[in-house]
Length: 350
Image (cartoon, rainbow, N blue to C red; front, side, top):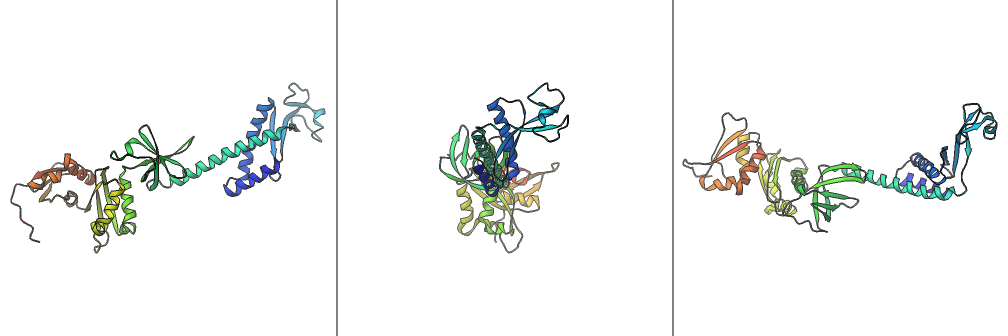
């Protein structure tokens, strides 16, 4: 037992980064409990573990007294001489009481403590790893459905995709792989709880960052993202280089980049529009694909705009069930009132 314990302690210290002192302290506490459980002792107990050899000894700690009233925790000065050369009244002596079969108990206890400590160390490592990924995306495959939530295999651990973070048009069949946005990581008694999302705007933003080198390099910026997950989204982009078209960079050759992002989101339609520091210009851009004839700020409202579009594009500007107008309002932070333009519309000769 002693050699095996010493070897395991050294291995854990080297491979898992668990300090020898931490392991020995945990073992001592566990062995004291094990001793009292198996031998029914109410003594004051101490455990010694030799960090080199792994030898384990059990000691009863007794106080030296003139008159012994409780022999379980007290000892006379005369008797204490066996254990201390010059004991003084009020001092304590250590009396070895290691049982003959304590090695077996110690081996079982040590195994339990080491297994538990390894579990705790692994859980802590997973927590630290995924805590650093909050706001980022991870790959995972569907493991199983548990009521309304979906359990996701992330390799070292599992993640949870709650009902409110699921795209309603996706089936989440076991074994199918997706990319997920890491929404939250919490410590629990059963290990880290990793909450994932397929609906968060951050997922769309990170997908574009991975797909478009100009975004990764900081040439093109994503200024705002809004989604109605699974159906439609709008992304406002801006170029820090006048020679780089931000929309063209995000769309890619023959639409390859935006299509790759859309496929990852199960065909979600993505409108890419140009951000502008002027809010009215930004609103006009955001209403794409509808053409804006006229736009003005509504008097008396801090963030309200009235927009006129060609009569035949009114339904396009508003969108099915108001979706386009709703997304524009969320993207810009302004209330939008869309009206058909009743004046004469000049043809664009450019």
